Image (cartoon, rainbow, N blue to C red; front, side):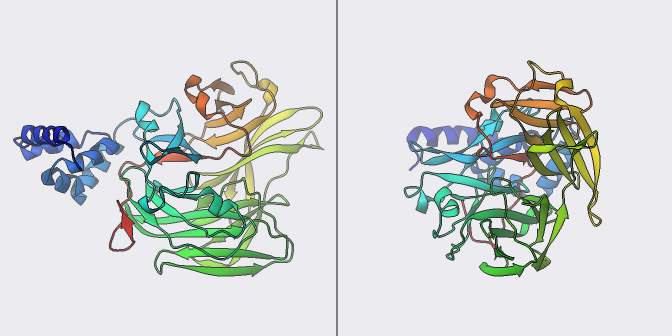
Length: 410
């Protein structure tokens, strides 16, 4: 129920702005940060209609794209904080110097369906795609024999979709999330559950189809056992899920076009002056339409950071992009073990991120320098492989979840 004070405040805003010429209101609203803008939809019906108009969205995107540093992003933690007092689940973020939105980057909220608020206090993010987040109860996904529940949420608008439960049993589950978006509207999506514990000559999948609202099981035979690294998140390229497996392979699974088959891509080998190096930590990610593979490798003689790019996807040919000895990196205090690849910058291919002794650093490939990202991340220090972070690019305009196509809740 709205308080009397809240009602008076809303009345003041409405009466003060109600006399604005429409063109002036348009010019004011189009200059606001997108998250603030969507909060103003509740001010009045006039404001709601103007902000919801597709022509306003097109002009907002066109104007924002011309601004310098228009793409804002942050890293979000897979573990979600439960705030019992407000009955909210807050997404942890890592504050990066590239994010010019300041504290706004720390205010994204993962809205939990009210029907489950009192039942579960531990939730995890399992995927990010086109500004949408897939999440679910931690116990449901991680435990054996539980019902797998998933939700999809738009962190900007607060709208979410509840998926029907998947009730079959997998030994251990890894999750993939793929969306198809056209003109900022969610057209379809797939959620893929994969049995990561199988060592038999077959791979089990469960795929959720947004068009039918149903889960479908698939089992694909293969000529060798496959084991997934459950702590390595899935990477999406051209709506194909890529996940690292044992034997230095990448499984590529297309949940849109090739549901009954998958492809294995080989990862590049590492040598130093002809001597094999051991990969101690690795990261697979997508950047500008290519897969990139970032490793920390070592032998008795040296330790190196190495980055490859999959230049020819069809032939599976990797190209060495960068290699540097860790001792040659200019840093704020030297890099020690363990050094773990954390993330690529989503738009600047010369910047990557590392965790070193639980401290987050940025590394510049061109200058071969690294620096600590300040004390603002002290609450987000974590130990691998149990720390999962996702790059979350704050969209210029939020992806719309069409209520006529999906069961949407606000």
